Image (tube, rainbow, N blue to C red; front, side, top):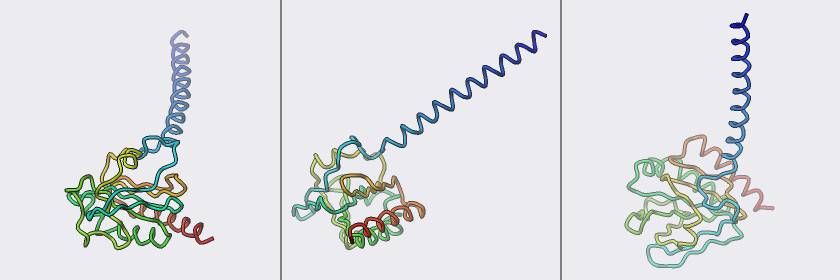
Length: 180
């Protein structure tokens, strides 16, 4: 009979462990949902893009408008694949929603030539350190859509069809809000 009790005790201990692990998993998932991987300080309202273009002209986006930033490098394989596919489509949708858009290369030497940039996008080759310091960019390309100082959508890496669909839905919603 003692082996039966040992088995029952082991099963009960396994059940308790499974319940505890599930609670820990739920807590970790909730923490992950709250933490935005592209922001250094999620509680602070994001400043709009500011910097200088290749000709040295100052650029500052209107803080009252939505804006999008794309961190990309023309030498990056995933960036190049995206530049000819989903990124131009997203740029058109964001422009239609009234969002200011900037393309931010990693350095002045890594800038895009004008023919590679969708028409409504401004390339900022020299960015303000204060502005750039708001972000934690670990992947290229990274695309961020912001409205009211809050990230409304972000994509890490090459934009998939699903990413594009989500981002367009956000852009459409922003466009409807701005039209009111």
